[in-house]
Length: 150
Image 1 (tube, rainbow, N blue to C red):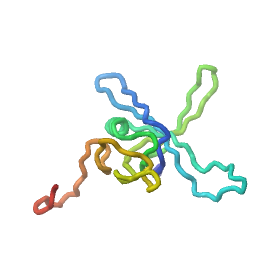
Image 2 (cartoon, rainbow, N blue to C red):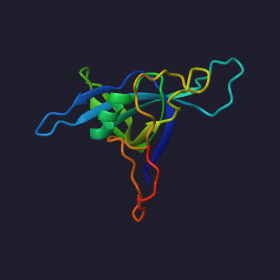
Image 3 (cartoon, helix red, strand yellow):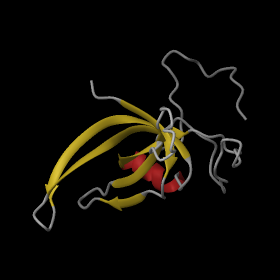
Image 4 (cartoon, rainbow, N blue to C red):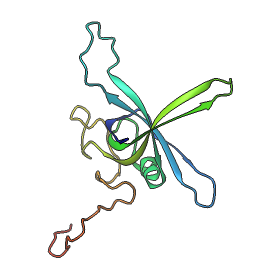
């Protein structure tokens, strides 16, 4: 099984490109700084975070482009994908990326720095577990009669 779940802060705004062809697809790349759970060394020079490259395709890529900003704490799940290529100097370069399947905000909308928020949202919607369209999946058999809606 190849399954990864990470929570971390965006090191920069996502970089988004669109594929060529009949139907253009968003491809968002971003890096998460994920804290390590380890004891600090006595000299304090030990790295305390890993920087994980992530890629989100299609609607997940569009969502990242629209709502994710540097410094936000996000929760993602997906799978590890490795690859390699030969650079212009003829050196083989190995890559490891997380292919994002689900992503969501990990902080509350009003979270302020020092209260776990770390960013000040502008006019963004409240956090949602939906990837792209802002709608929540309702399990089969659940009736909507009598549910309060605002």
